[in-house]
Image 1 (cartoon, rainbow, N blue to C red):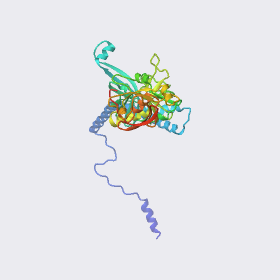
Image 2: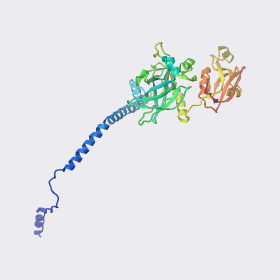
Image 3: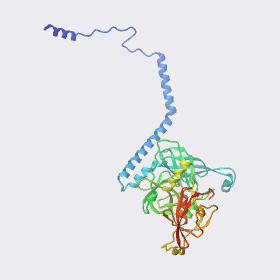
Image 4: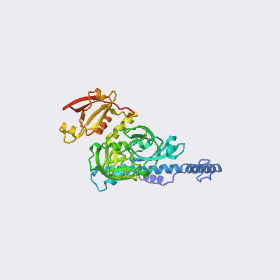
Length: 415
């Protein structure tokens, strides 16, 4: 029995037999043939040619992707900080970073007809006129909200993103009376600004405006809300472009610096939410900012945006009356402390108001649940009402308070 372990030890210590070598195989590498060398050189030259051809585009795309990634990362961090820290000394800085990817510059080329060119330049022909404005990305699918007067009569519209990319935009639709337009760009990886509720904004609240005044991309200014519910015929007249009236709408007033080129840009609250579309200024003689700027409130801009995207156009409400403001004598008759409401003076043909029983001299005090401030206020409320729906109005007629129901009509295009 003692011989078995010794035998096992001997077997394990023996070297394994070497395998027979196969014919044609060698342990040494053979030198490459001439054909292999030529193939290798050809592939190397092809690789160099491809790199030379595509390196500029690749480098540009990498740069855009890098810029976009950095901006989106900054925006995400800023939004998270804003949500977790409602009060901060650096809040304006964070708000600016949070909304930067959502605000774009708009550059247009407008070709005026020969007669207008002649009036401006003194000779015939077409005149390409460049224009600048701003816009706000309100949907990641590429929808951009701006003022109609920014893109009016433009035959070429280019959008400049915050990361440096420039892309042509298509017009989805517009609402000339409200001075709003919707564009769309075919591009991925967009940031959309969150909607705020302009009806919750209060006077004295701090706000930030972002746009491209005079073509200066991503200009940030700050200020406060100076007033809300501005209904002003002067503003309406200033915003009247060629080929149609503007309807008297509600505005937010701010002292945040707004200049030519800010039109269509964002007015945001201190949570980085869109509360208005910058649209008009009362300017000094030089044409610059004098501390009085106006924005279309977000609740109205959102309504019009959704109508354009859904239906391609906006139908405004209409009741067909000419109105005057209430004077102090009328106010005394109604025991008002100060004049409020609006007086019916006349009716249009086939007027919904007249069909509902309104008469000349009636004083409209309420539209639904809303107390009427003046004639422009009522016009604004009617304009934003849905045609075909019914609304209850409270009126004062010959010492009596009455209620009537009006079926809202469609505002004619020539008004």
